[in-house]
Amino acid sequence: QVQLVQSGAEVKEPGASVKVSCETSGYTFTDYYIHWVRQAPGQGLEYMGRINPDSGGADFAQKFQGRVTLTRDTSISTVYMQLSRLTSDDTAVYYCARLWGWTISGVSSPAENWGRGTPVTVSS
Amino acid sequence: EIVMTQSPATLSLSPGERATLSCRASQNIATTLAWYQQKPGQPPRLLIYYASNRATGIPARFSGSGSGTDFTLTISSLEPEDFAVYYCQQRRIRPDTFGQGTKLDI
Image 1: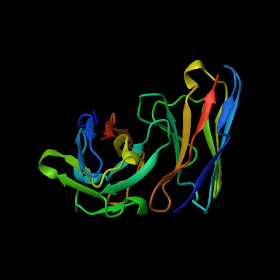
Image 2: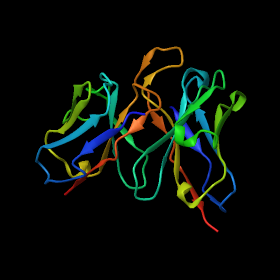
Image 3: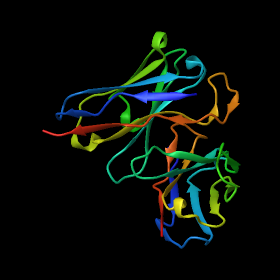
Image 4: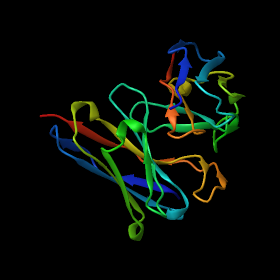
């Protein structure tokens, strides 16, 4: 079955960077975008951006432009999200997800899967 | 970016009652809208996609409607496990955006 397995919890100091991994299995890695969504404690869902695992191209919500990097390793079907210049406002659970809608080639798809989330705490 | 506004912020009902949750988009998004349910400590769970299609395994008591800018999620008869937070999400225009959520309280 489809699985998205994320790396473990992180604690970082302000100004540092964090890199979270999302290992996928159970489907063709290069057929679907991988998206990143975060959720601060007690708050709602915030969309960050997505990566095309086939081309490596990525796009982001404007808020995260210049601070988030998405990369992938096709040999191990894994996507990485790196967030730099961390502040306390970045304390959140970070999710990777394969979202409903369409494949990279534009075929309609209801497929939807989420990782369990990676808690990131930013504190001095 | 498109702003998604959900109402009410909190909805207090009892098991067996009907729940109606609303979501409004700041621009026309056709039917490119989803509804999610989230419980504490869990990732969101897709309920409805393309405004009215139930996701795999979602009970028939959940239904979605609407198009353009106004959307509704209806739970016909609340079960105890339905008390959670619900989010709408648009995927029409990049970047995707979520509503702020409606908490369904017992």
